[in-house]
Image (tube, rainbow, N blue to C red; front, side, top):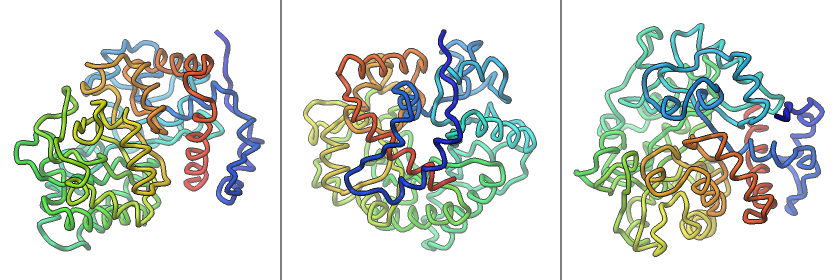
Length: 378
């Protein structure tokens, strides 16, 4: 198998150009990347996806065996399929010394540094703080912070989480939740959200986000256009909201609009279907209507769009991994999070570009956003 070696340092030096390039979006540095390398930048994967000893079903297990160091086999796989980012879970984290070593090894995989992501919302979703080897502060849930009515508490929480994530060399936290907890039957959001009041949720969410960024860790608001109204969990399968766009604008979209107006630069999509907004019945992650028509055009969002995990049932029960990734890119997703079968998905996307189903300029649009983002972090 042909090796696709990491880029030389000479490519990184001009990256500052991306932050002040002309509005014509002409980036000659992009030509230094092969199509294969550009596609790799679109993927954020589990570390186990890079280890050939893990079958797909074990890759996506929440618990059990996990990658805790970079082996020669992982390095070899990465050189062939160079993902732009890696997301770590509890099974990857043993103790402070181990995780710092692992994260340094991940950052050194490529001259275009792979970013390291983690779900550290505080409360029940805390991959690092829940590990007793770290002796870190923990939080009951974000709803409790919202109920305090004190945005300073939200900021302090974000700042505290950001400080320890920075200490252990994480780059991006998949937090805060921007969902509004409007449906008491919702099985997945609940007290992860700051409030059932969209204006309180918006203020708390943005304050938490700013706290994270005060420590040099990037945030990601989620799950657009709002998962709080659904009766089912998209981890398990089909999930929908029957609200119209106008109804969403009066509630679920308020925190997202506040985030966009304040300059957030990463938004995660929900795999929920909105039959009264997009009659195609595609989940938001695969919906051009919602991502390009609503999020990009109507809400004027300019930052990165990352999918929710593509291993979730709302995707895998309806689409094969390669087709789901292709449709998400065509819909407007920049970063494909945790495809169920990384290698085959990578190959499917590359083949779709070579066959003309995905225009290469569409790939370039996302890669430019990603490189600008990485340059800002670096």
